[in-house]
Length: 548
Image (cartoon, rainbow, N blue to C red; front, side):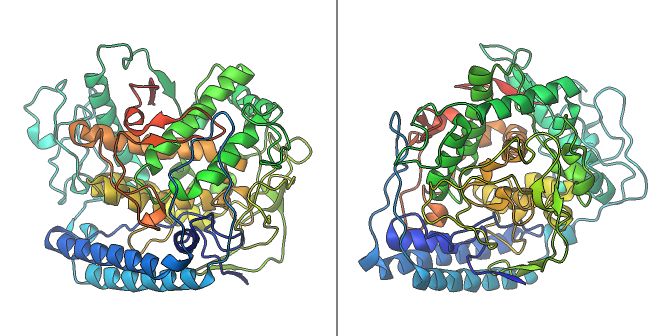
């Protein structure tokens, strides 16, 4: 059994950073994201949970103070153009890591106890599965009210009106906010509820963007990978291969500062490596990654002549059967195949999550389709894999094949339509929404973000916390994450457009000031710096795109 001493996608890295002011040492940093809780406390219990969170925040600050002797102040996310992001040396922090982990476990235990004393959203909502939903042919308005009780149909109209408001105009865009109780279990698990909720958000986006430079009608449209034609898919993967065969833009191939950066594609990987502790468990997690994948999309066009948009991968379609997905079938129109099957491997144990999972259905080099062995290689990482081969320094050159070990264990637990729908409808506040998405709250230790990374299995580039963009699937996974975020925002745009919460360091370790929309975010070797507040709307600022 592989023992993950580095606490995969863990909180130990936050302590290492807190105690050293530097990038966590190789072999002790996180390698995946942690999870999403499907049973959140309600009403009066939320106050108690908030108090617990405050206590943990205080505890983290106290821990950081205790390690002040070995701490250096946290630098702002480095602005690196034109010379690139600044590398930080690593130094051991095992004692701090253990202390932080113990603190997190104390918090988790208290949180779980509080949840057990509270009725969860799921246990207090009765959902019917007695009959399939019935909608009118115009806008999907259901014939039953959003009572959450024994309704033969519970879909909300895509105009945003609940079916209990049937007398309202079918074309009006209501401010009614859908809730979990509007849908029954079958609708949620099948994806019908998610499709309905997405439609409501889309209608509200259309209503608010009817005029101006960027409108609903002229915006670029990102589609699910499988909705693209074969020619469109191939154009997309060919452009990625082109980017991996193009000289760097902001540094020199194999430079002393970035010895593992040999291509324009590598610059994206190196930037993610360098910024890891400022873009996860932070206020800018969603906005930073939104722009990161936007810049990738732009580079495909500017550098390699790609005229399409960045697709998204709706991994919920593949939940429990990802190894059978068209996305990974290995033909020339896929994202490449699974890794070559390697038999006789042990289970892997992830310490922080206290999770043991079996080997996936691959484990070796990708041998078919785009990005296969002999046609595609990755140059950076891993930094924190439980399977070894970790580089000594974060930008070391480490050429190797793309590895995948597609895992149904993760896809069927953390990346289902139930996970997505409960996340979007169950978390009206940005703090909990982004925390649960990443897995920094509750008893589900991976979440839709981390689960999507770990679908790649282990060992794989996709599960490495720092260098995960090495697998091109990273970008269509994060396009799905941005899709979810966009739906969540547009459901209640006035309240959520500029909603942010948190600081600029991973789980606020070391403690830093709350981020503001006026803060400048660094994109290292990828692009010029951007102002946080300019990245909040996919239909304004540097963007003009929407999701289909």
